[in-house]
Length: 228
Image (cartoon, rainbow, N blue to C red; front, side, top):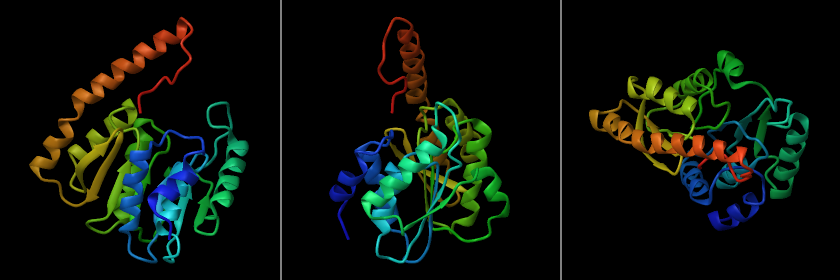
């Protein structure tokens, strides 16, 4: 089985926003998944995170279930993005480890009955979709890892976390790696909830940066519009 350095060498050339340290967090969580129990990824794009997850469980009779509808349009690329996703998996040698389901996660969840061992959420970033995606944790056992990308960076993601986690009884907040938030299935303590609230100043800082970068684009700035 390859180590994380080798896995990241395969994943890094793939288009996406997952950073190396965030990839390491995904790798570590996936390596703790029991053999034969599936990992669910919501939002695969071109497969950067998918490759990290697949290589982490490779050879352990474990599948990565990748859920992405590959919506057409300039932002997501539709069928062209799906073609790159499949080509990237083939290049990394993990095509047989990944089971792609090209559906919307919110539709698929309504009929899903199988248990899962890990959840990674990086799909549509609006409040309602993220809040629904967090409900996939109902299929995870106590202690299972849940990771959410663009937390405290995206307004929709952050509001969903506050609504579903801060006031809920299903997920414990463990911390973050950049904008990748780490949770564990379990009843949160007061300390867990306060730890989540303590991230709000960083969230406000990111929102201010986003607004400034978007205004800068009016004057010709062409860098990334979002802090990751």
